Image (cartoon, rainbow, N blue to C red; front, side):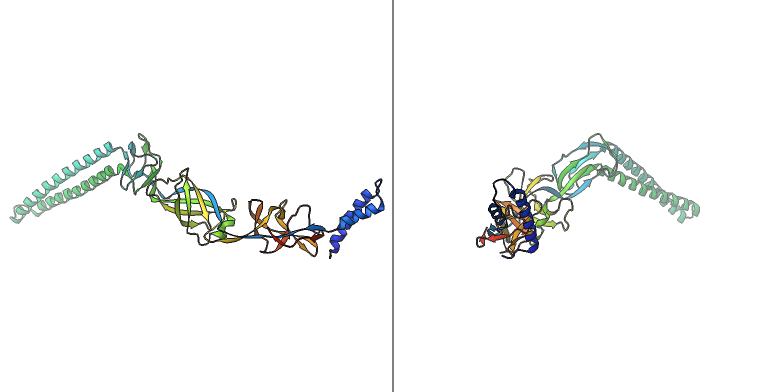
Length: 369
């Protein structure tokens, strides 16, 4: 057996110290002390084991959430007191459906006033048109001076301009009257309601949050070690709440960066929500399955030392050497080796009581775990 000098020196030193402590004890003969030293120097018997190679379709269960695909804030285009609120959180609405009304009585008065002003302006215009026509006839007969006709023409032009101004005021009043009904800009579901009947709201002040469309997102954070396993992923299955209904989400996006604090990244899928059973904010149980089967290495738990850092022990030149490894799952007394061990590489089956440099003797052939 080839034992390295530095390890042999350390072991002999420990043995001699122990012999010095016990050799002088009553009743211990020199032969017993020599036998003890020989036993201490004898190599430890160990058995080697090779990692079991498992072909598997890795899967992972995650807790995620349902999100709206797109959201929009709905705000009034006119200021005023909210008269009525017609929807509640969770209601599905169609495009153009009334959601709330803003002080309709006041805007109706403004519209009526604008229509009356337009009627008066139109009457003045009609009168000015008739007067201009008479002045034109008189001018042709040279009954009136040119200046008199010009004055009538100016009065007509002023009346026409007043009609245009009154029409614009009427159109604005009509627009404000119509906008006093706050309508859904698109089909979707009400996520949040800030509108309160009797409350004052300014132009642009948010009244509702609307989740647009019948498609929702389903998102979850995935441990960083799963990043290599998701190549080719096209979707995942999930359930919501206590319902046994299984949904299938198509892959929408995979976060390109790993969060430094959680060491995870986000995976997002999309699914049609035609029936409305999936509501933003719901928890979802996501079953993430790698698209391709993969080979994984498994060792008995006893073959991996994990006191300070995960490591396996290998026999080299008759003594123990240590290799660091990265471990993963633990299932039924076995532990997954993610990195640091080659397939088929033999390791000591039981690391208990062993440390770097201890001489060992292999008693069995390599066996699978």
